[in-house]
Amino acid sequence: MPNTRTAFASAGLVAALLLSASSAALANGEVNLYSSRHYDTDERLYSDFEEATGIKINRIEGNADELIARMQAEGVNSPADVLLTVDTSRLERAKEAGVLQPIESDVLEARLPDYVRDDDNQWFGFSQRARILFYDKNDVAEPPMTYQDLADPKYEGQICIRSSSNVYTQTITAALIEHMGEEEVRDWAAAVVGNFARDPQGGDTDQLRGIVSGECDIAMSNTYYFARAIRKPVDGVSDSIDQIGWVFPNQDGIGAHMNLSGGGVAAHAPNKENAIKFLEYLASDQAQQYFSAGNDEYPAAPGVAISPSVAQLGFFKPDDVDASAIAANIPAAQKILNEVNWK
Image (cartoon, rainbow, N blue to C red; front, side):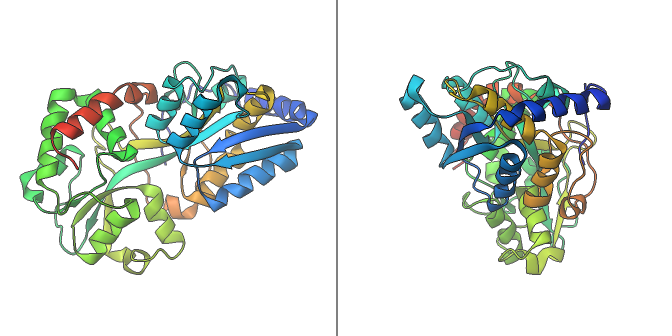
């Protein structure tokens, strides 16, 4: 489980802050949530918050880009209080679109490491997924140990991976730009395209299914898709789980790339105080544990217990590069992916 930069207040201070926030929340009211997280397990997060605070959550769910566009169109009349979405690139997109606002919260600053927070406190990461490498244990004697190894000619015709339009692909590329520079990443991306087993297609679970079917020998996926297949039946994966090995890349260097799921307070939030209380709740031990138990994610707050399915993947060194730096590299990443014909 990742546990890097801490920069935390004492446990006593954190407990006091959370108690204070909880007491203030008893003012009741409502909070209007725009969310692109489509996980049934999140229902527990919402019901627990409502029960603890008396604040009613009104939800609108949809595609992240559609929700951001809707908030822009609604302007100052938008009822949105909170935007929740997946991946650093979308959080940064919301910030650039002007639909979020900076907030001050001692709770969030105490609970969340600085590398999962926007530099301007407009968005915050509440859960993490490691983007790692999987391989067919029957066919791959020497799996790639780093992201850079995916460019090795010995893996020609073996790699299954997401498309260039996928935010996970854009974000890992943006992270590598931060570490390696644009020129080196362009060469890397071109070589990876040369090693594709097929044109990019499907979601992360489809990459894992590609290993089981024999269509590819190596795939990149977020950890929670694989951990979910450990915890409960997932078609085309769970029955062959023993066939799949995994590698947390770059353990002797930068560490494994982490994707964020997070949110922020809407720019024109009519219930700003309740919106901040909701974000503070998402950083609490209770909510952080449920991100792991309910959706096989890693908590963003260090020291929080993880679920058995996630723990089975083992301990690893995460890349703690600042999420804001990754977000700044997204345009360059997309340009490189287009240039090398990463479909």
